[in-house]
Image 1 (cartoon, rainbow, N blue to C red):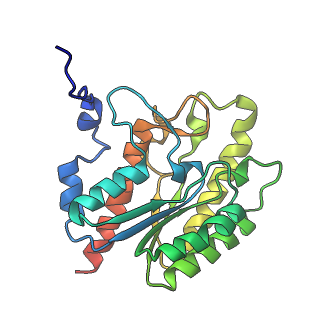
Image 2 (image 1 turned 30 degrees about the vertical axis):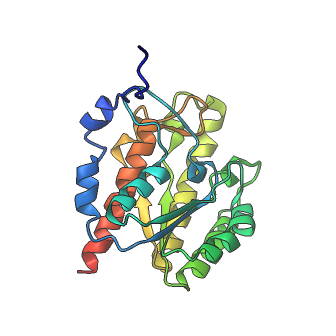
Image 3 (image 1 turned 90 degrees about the vertical axis):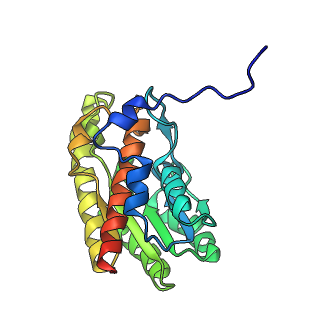
Length: 233
């Protein structure tokens, strides 16, 4: 007789990873989470493009966060508007209005990663686009989260000829994102300084994260939200 039960997913490495929170740890940190309408804006990082690797749950950081929040707020509504290949201006022009129509109380905004891949890179223009999105969301009372990106030039899959310029642009993008976030009252997730940035967290395409990387991003986002919640006591 053939079993109809799904095969168990092996997440042993994730459970043993000191840089990945367990569900129980997330629940403890988010116990006072008030958010009920969670939206994600951005490019492929927001969308959740990833490479699955053994030992880690095949889920994006954004979906992991939604799952964690839903354990606290079972009626949580979640919408992910992320679309790969979009530059910051396109993220704003195509996703901001739908995000506002959703009436979120928690938003994660990720933009600029594709801008650094162009022939030229204007960090001030990216910062302006981020500021426009953040301002619109914050004006509704929404909690806004932003992130600096991991330095993917640590990945062996990034062609050597692109490493220097990508490394410089990623650092500049992170600094501009941090600056606008602090100025506008966002919660900034500092991935560039994470100790796993030089470890095996990257996909073989030389652009994205693997599922370990996504688990770590989810963990750091939960930690940042928990820090914010602690200030509300």
